[in-house]
Length: 232
Image (cartoon, rainbow, N blue to C red; front, side):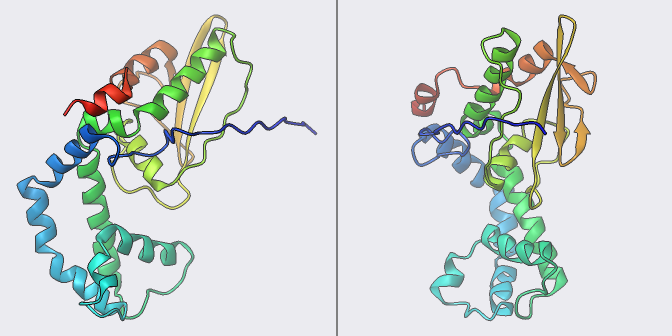
C-alpha cells in the first residue's frame, strides 16, 4: 500500500468563493447584468410561478420564508430531493422542478457571463491552481496531488472559465480534475469535469500544452485583486 502524507492548508482569504460584499467592482458587475432588460423581464414573468412553487411546498405565499425563497434556494430544495431519489416536496410537480432548474441556469449564466465577474469572482483560485502547476515544473514543489473542497458556488464560476462547457448550475457532487503531464521536457494539462475529458476552446488537444493552458486562463487572473476590486 502507498502511504500519503496529508498536509492541511489554511485559507484565510477564502479564494474559492466570490465576495461581492467586499469587492465593489464584482458587485457592480453583478448588478449591471441583473439590471438588464432581458433578466428583469424573465424573472418578473415567472414570479407567479415562484409563488405557486411556494404554495406547492405548503408554504404560505405571504410568509417571510416564501418572500426570501429565491429560485436558487428552490433549486437547492428540489435538486437535493432529486439527487437522493426522494419524492418532490408537498405538491410540487415535475414541471415545477424543471422550472426551478431552468431558472437557476438562467441566473448562473447571467452571473458569470462577463469576464470581469469571472476574474474577480474565481480568478484568485485559478491563480492558485496555475501557480501550483508552475511550481511543479520549475522544481520548487514536489507535491503530486492537491485537493480543494468547495461548493457549487465554487464550481459554477469555474465552469464559465472553460468554454465550451455550459454555464449551467453544476449537478450535485460535481468536480474538476486538472492533471499535469510530463513527456521529456514538455508539459501538458488535461482538464476533466465529472469524469469527462474536456477540450477548452483555447486548447488544440486534450492534453493541452502547458503554456497554452496558462495563456488561455491568464486574462481571468487578477494581477492585483484588491486594487481591481476598488476600481468601480
